[in-house]
Amino acid sequence: MSEQAKMKIHILQCGSISVAPSVIDGGRVTLRSSAQQLLAPEGRRVTLPVSAYLIEHPRGLVLVDAGWCRDISPEGVYDAKAARAVLGGQLAAFYRPALGPGQAVHEQLAALGIRPQDLELVIVTHLDPDHVSGVRHVAGAKRIIMPEDEYFWSCRTVYKLRQPWKLWIDLPIERVFYRGFPDVPNSWAIDVFSDGSLYMVNLPGHTDGMAAVVAVNGRRFALMCADAAYTRCAWESDAAPGFGFDAGLQRKSLEWVRKMSRRPGCAGVFASHDAAVMPQIVEV
Image (cartoon, rainbow, N blue to C red; front, side, top):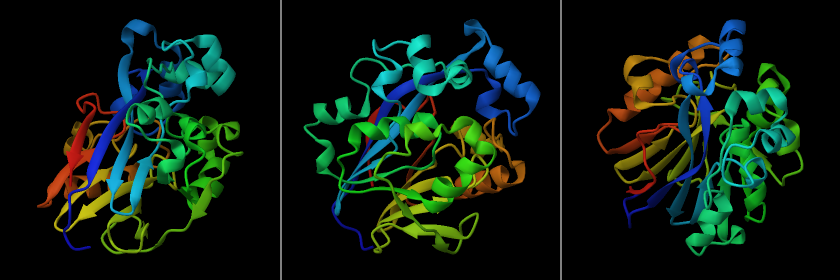
């Protein structure tokens, strides 16, 4: 894609999670780490943002992920009863989700004068509830897409423990297919508009089908790496997030993220739960 007018990427904070420190950089899931996370008292937890991204793309408005749904936090604070009703007891205790006033994705879009039907595309990077539950608020978008490997495969394997089907199975999600692609961790990617301006790159390890999103404008690009990392420290020090199921693939994905972060023209690499990344607009 030749360089043209700059794309704007709005980094939106669509709620938060409250987790034990091991979730940030604890690597592969174990029974011990699961118990530590579920039972961690409030004073030992770390609050992290849940990010989504609105891209002003030449082909239209593109939303990447959608954060928490409003039902999970009706009053804008952690509500154990409401969270259990949406997620079930274990996931509610795991995430302790909150969604502040005005933070639901449709509320933030409305503040920008954008209706769900104004969205050309919604990309779901993977099926963890903090990424997909808010998609129902933008179900009127022209298209909602997700990698087939995530929609069909990941949610039927070990990852189903944290991917309740009721959050997304009734949504009008179109399944798209990875194709062979050079210089990416699993040799798979999707050229969304078939013009080199927006890619979904398979970054396995956190889930098998998870996609990062790369927005490209000439020599400049920005990478939204989903949950391949929780913080910049992850790719700089090779510390994979907790609760992945394939440590080797996590490291391979992190290595690629680190390489991308060092390429000329990189406007930024953004992880979905990085507390150091504030809501802002990034230009590519």
